[in-house]
Length: 428
Image (cartoon, rainbow, N blue to C red; front, side, top):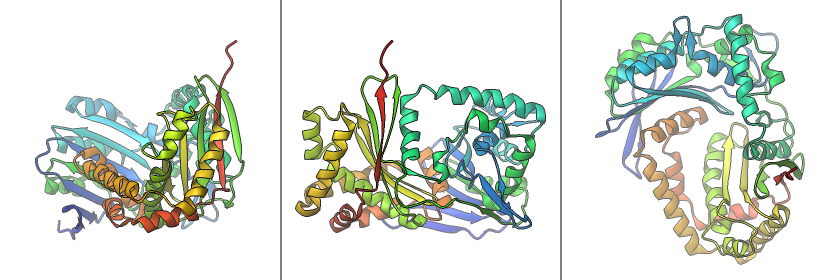
């Protein structure tokens, strides 16, 4: 079959990969890496835990599904009439897994032999859903146990409470696995409805990186991909106010010292805006507050933070935020000092040499990612779902200027922040 291969290139690092829109509807990204013996392959769909209401072209209204449905579907797709896909991968020696995120679901394997056989296994089982009343009920018990594992995990509560405090309605507030009550409402009809809506190949992506033959991979795709209709699925997202929902949220759980996560909430951004903002704000926060800053040294000496301290940004579909997290004997006092430091630096300005050092370090860290097959495959999948390329991050870092981080520092709304705190539970 003749393909129009779009070559995605990075002028900065001299790398490239192929992007193919397959006649079956699927987008395929292939990144052959000379000298590598391992291969990492993924099949992903633009369907995650935040997709809880949708309709197809012929539907009169939106369908709502229970929280945790995307994750439940991921679990069940590993099984078919013949058994588990894990058993098939086990016979070839491949390592297989899957994951559900807020905005995507992905199925993957990595191997150093029998790549073509493993790709056939992957493409077969993701296109053969097999849901029965019996196997759905059985899975509820398994996922219930998974949910219960997090009940006493302070890190998990810290993470989820940070979203609960910042967001009023956006479904990032929902645990990816759902709750025991929500998964009890899932049945085979729900799973088939979501599969048919979101596992349409026009909403799917194949991402492969490593030591493999691209032509042979495409031959397997030609043979096994089942053409899909071009029907569109519309998602319904609730209105989300700009302001954080709560300024503070606290929980008590077993931990050695108080844990905190601070969230600065932003307006919605397009994928390309979010990608650039992710780079700019990540670097800005590292320059102003990171472990090589004078602020970190001062707070460390005052025992207000320790090596667990970290800063960063997160941008997914229809939301963007910055975060600061770690352990502290007094998280709320630390929050005040953080905001005071960011206000001070708006006039006294961050260290320009520190900016150049962190920019170089960030560029080097991203560059090293292109020697890891798993990171490359994930980068291509994430880029396709966001509508950008896998090289956009490194291109953005190379173009960031000192003036960009100063502008970001002045633009961040320090009043629109919330703090999640987990305090040590008293020993009885």
